[in-house]
Image 1 (cartoon, rainbow, N blue to C red):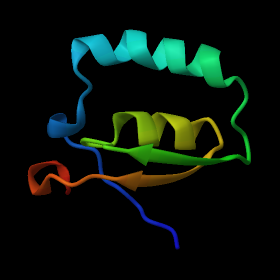
Image 2: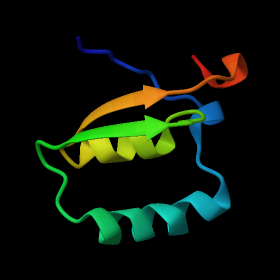
Image 3: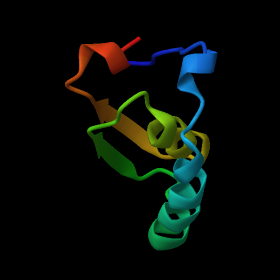
Image 4: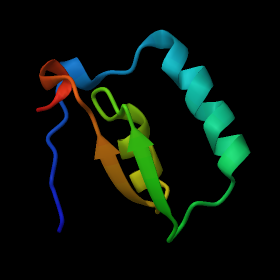
Length: 68
Protein backbone atom coordinates (compact mmCIF):
# COMPACT_ATOMS: atom_id res chain seq x y z
CA UNK A 1 0.00 0.00 0.00
CA UNK A 2 1.28 3.46 -0.85
CA UNK A 3 0.27 6.62 0.97
CA UNK A 4 0.83 10.15 -0.23
CA UNK A 5 1.16 12.73 2.52
CA UNK A 6 0.87 16.49 2.16
CA UNK A 7 3.17 18.12 4.67
CA UNK A 8 1.86 21.05 6.68
CA UNK A 9 3.36 23.39 9.25
CA UNK A 10 2.14 21.01 11.97
CA UNK A 11 4.63 18.44 10.62
CA UNK A 12 7.73 20.58 11.19
CA UNK A 13 10.17 18.84 13.51
CA UNK A 14 10.90 19.94 17.03
CA UNK A 15 14.34 21.61 17.29
CA UNK A 16 15.87 18.58 19.01
CA UNK A 17 14.66 16.24 16.25
CA UNK A 18 17.23 17.46 13.71
CA UNK A 19 20.09 16.37 15.98
CA UNK A 20 18.33 13.11 16.72
CA UNK A 21 17.84 12.43 13.03
CA UNK A 22 21.55 12.96 12.36
CA UNK A 23 22.33 10.44 15.12
CA UNK A 24 19.80 7.92 13.75
CA UNK A 25 21.26 8.27 10.23
CA UNK A 26 24.73 7.62 11.60
CA UNK A 27 23.55 4.68 13.70
CA UNK A 28 21.51 2.98 10.96
CA UNK A 29 23.72 3.73 7.97
CA UNK A 30 22.27 2.94 4.57
CA UNK A 31 18.59 2.01 4.95
CA UNK A 32 17.84 1.68 1.24
CA UNK A 33 15.43 -1.22 0.75
CA UNK A 34 15.31 -2.06 4.46
CA UNK A 35 12.06 -2.36 6.41
CA UNK A 36 11.81 0.04 9.35
CA UNK A 37 9.21 0.22 12.13
CA UNK A 38 8.74 3.67 13.66
CA UNK A 39 6.84 2.90 16.85
CA UNK A 40 5.49 6.01 18.56
CA UNK A 41 5.97 7.96 15.35
CA UNK A 42 4.33 11.19 16.58
CA UNK A 43 3.70 13.21 13.40
CA UNK A 44 6.06 11.08 11.31
CA UNK A 45 9.19 13.22 11.05
CA UNK A 46 11.57 10.26 11.31
CA UNK A 47 9.26 8.04 9.22
CA UNK A 48 9.23 10.53 6.38
CA UNK A 49 12.98 11.16 6.58
CA UNK A 50 13.77 7.42 6.54
CA UNK A 51 11.40 6.87 3.61
CA UNK A 52 13.20 9.67 1.75
CA UNK A 53 16.42 7.73 2.42
CA UNK A 54 14.96 4.65 0.70
CA UNK A 55 13.55 2.65 3.61
CA UNK A 56 10.17 0.93 3.58
CA UNK A 57 8.62 2.48 6.69
CA UNK A 58 5.68 1.45 8.83
CA UNK A 59 4.73 4.20 11.29
CA UNK A 60 2.60 3.47 14.35
CA UNK A 61 1.17 6.26 16.51
CA UNK A 62 -1.40 5.90 19.27
CA UNK A 63 -2.33 9.55 19.86
CA UNK A 64 -5.12 10.70 17.57
CA UNK A 65 -3.82 14.28 17.70
CA UNK A 66 -0.69 13.18 15.84
CA UNK A 67 -2.46 11.29 13.07
CA UNK A 68 -3.34 13.30 9.98
